[in-house]
Length: 432
Image (cartoon, rainbow, N blue to C red):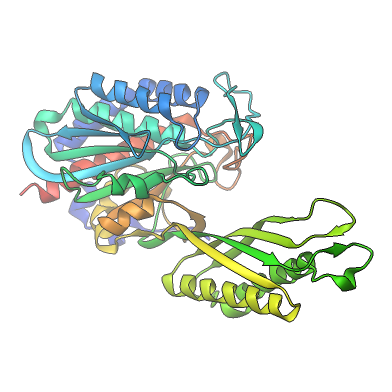
């Protein structure tokens, strides 16, 4: 349950109410940029590209950044783009990140700028859609770059605009995402001091900012369990070691880990099976079965325990039937962790970006974000911006990752103001 906090009780009075002349100038220019910001979003929405395939998306971003007089690096982590804006005065290096990839989903909205892009994904024909809001993230960060580029002479420090591909995960067998951007030096030359990121939220009221110190989004792990038995004719199951029956027991056993081994009053945890594959014909008991799924955890101790329990559960259940089980677990995203000291310092910046009744201290959620890999290297803050439109909190326009996904473009201004306030305030705090 989300709950409203009284800002004045936790934020120093002078910081909450003090808005510098520089911030006011930025806010005025933000409103002048709103139309362009929405145009950018609609362009990206109409021209989506899948993870590690964001070629034209990257070119468009680079073109826009160059038109602002910003130094550009292209081809980072395959299709990623980095913009570097050096202020006229010395100060810290602030990074702002936006993810740029779309999803293999066929759009079912009536938007005039709906996607009609079709491609092949995992051997199947599918539409491509920005069904998670990455189009809005790109537009907001581009708008932030546009405003700050006009304030270059007043900036105390450097801003790195990181446009990251493959947040949804690279294709099988490929590297990608935040981990590859870090590997290729996205946080270096110049070295980043702090990083900020946001996610649009179709499930909360437009203009709402939701934040949380420490863990805000779960770690995400992918597991694969391969069970090997003995093949036989379906009419003589006694001649087999049936991997399908074993797989069914393993799936049930995985849920026992959550219900009986995880201290759920401490933090939530999830194990979900997304793929169960076995056999090619109705009357053949196959030799092998495969289980693939995801693990979501909100603390490292629980994550370690679940990894261990999945392996012992699968192997022991398989052994009782005379089968074998091989287990592979891969970490796709770390815990998205908001540095508590940084959160306390920057909360006034978020507070000034919305109204008091729309600033929420939220609970952690089980979706994951590879923004977490940046936060493992430098302090960072990740927060949510509500965009449910006129339907209000809890009454969704649509859900993320669905063909009907829609968001309220009027909410983008809250995200833009937040990014500007965070950047300018952090620079003001650390310019010396």
